[in-house]
Structures are given as C-alpha cells and as structure tokens.
Image (cartoon, one colour):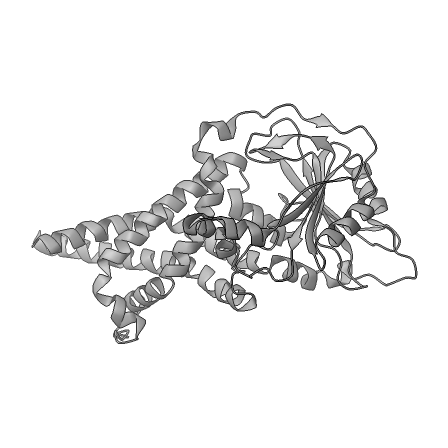
Length: 386
C-alpha cells in the first residue's frame, strides 16, 4: 500500500513538473540540437555569402580587426572566431558591446561580422539577438538566456533544477522497467496511441537518461551563478584602451611557437580593461587545442595570454597539465562543458547529441499527451460515480 502511495505521489510530481518544464524542454532541446552544428550549418546555409574568391595578397588580421573596431568603436572587445582553414574561408568576428545595462553576468549584446580577408569587404553583419540577422545565432542566445539577459538565464537555471527533480521522480516511477528497457525486453504495446506513447516515453526517457543528466548538470554549472545576487550587481567601470594595440599577427605567430601545432579556435582582442566573473579581459588571448589533448577536454581550454599594448607573452594554460593536477571530481567539472557541447567523443558524440538533444522535446510532448489523456479518464470516472 505504501509503495502504491509513493508511486502515485511520484507520478503526480513527475507529471506536474513535466507540464511546467514542458515549454523550456522544447526550447532547450531544439536549440541545443541546433547548437551542436551551428557553425557548420551557418557556413553551409550561407555559403554563397561566406565563401570568398582567393587572391594573391591576403590582408593581415591586424588590418581586419581595425575594420571591426571602426564599425563598433564602443565595443568591449572582439573574438576572431577561428583562423580560416581554407583559402576560400572568410574571417569571422564576434563583437561584445556594453551600453550601460551590463551586469556581472555578461555583455549586453553580441554582434557578428564576416569579412573578406583579401579585400576587407564586409560580407555580413548583425546581432545575435536579432532573428533576422541569423536564426542560428539567435537560437543560441535563446538557449542561453531566452534572449532576456540575466533574468532569462535565471529562468533556465530554475528549469534545469526542476528537471533534475523530474528525472529523479522518473527513475523512481520506472525503476522496475530500467533493465528490461535497456535490453529491449519491455515491448511497446501498440494497442492504441496512449499505450504506444507511454511505451516510447519510457524507452526514450531511460535510454537518454545518462546523457540528459550530463547535459543538464553541465548546463547548470554554467548558469548556477544566476542564483547569486552578485550576478546582478554592476561591475567595476570599464576603462577603454586608448594606447596603441600590439600587432595581432605577431601575437598569433608567437602563440603557435609556444605551443607547436596549436589550433587557435578564438583570439580575443580587448578594447577595454575590465574584469567579469573574476576573468581579466584586458589581455589578448589565444584559445584553442594543443595536439595530443584528449577530445574529452573542451576545445578552447588551452590559452596563451599577451599584454595588449606591447604584445609581450604574459601567461599560458596547458589543458593537459591542468587536467593532471586535479582530483577526480575537479577533473569531471573541468571537462563538463564537453559533455554539454557533445564534443567528448568527437564527431560520434556530436551526432549522438543532435538526436539525444531532441529527446527532452519528445518527452515534454508525449508527457503532456499522457497527462491530458489521464485527466480525461479521471473526469469520465468521476462523472460515472456521480
């Protein structure tokens, strides 16, 4: 009797949390799956715009970033989004802008700009917050904060916590079916849409359980700060860098000498001196991958930092050395982002994450359908009793 009562309580909690979280699961699941291959999809969809005709002379990065700065003079800084691998690749920049509303959370708004590296022509530009500029980049902002800034991040964090509770109640409800479902010994009954949906809900929920726990835990790790009131405090004033900025190409070359074979995924160029969440953003920084680094380590954990005015080397972080120094739990947290982005097993895990990323959306829809059906049955039984 106690077990039956516990199951009813757990089912009720599971159902109501599922209903509350349904919309967020749909949003996070769909946008998360898109994020796995955002850059590749963007390049493919916009290949007519972003593919350039090679020429004999290529402009240095030091000239290209100045085009961006001229367009966004009040920007806090820019990232070169990966160095072009092919001669037909354009150079992409991400621009961080602060307009006085910024909290400790992050910038007010991000913009993007793609430039032809042979003639300096701007091929495309827009805002991450504008769906008309780029649906893919806009969906990334929706995934991060519902396009509502710090408050949106807080909503996502609360939804993530409730989802963990939802997962725990689901484990209790379906505990008898776990092993059977894993070895496909609990057949889906296709007697009607309700039994079929219920069976699929159970199978997909169990099979995607481990990966969904990893995805949502690592996501919470990134947004947990939104529960702290300091997240919403104004940071120290931003001081524009007025001195001459050192040659970018020379810093990139030096970074690749310090780490031979260094694959630079981002090169950050600050236009102001500021600290956000304990990170000094007044240094130029090359972030990327050192050959031999396990794929389970996030792709940009290794860094080389420079004095932005002189170009002198200041510090470096080797992801392999950092990983070796940490205990088991700290190791897990250090690599957690790769579980969120789906890069921990290379292309295999990325493809897997596109599929698994859609599972929360299916669970939300199927759970709502089952709840609706159950509500109708209860209503009919009450009418019969009356």
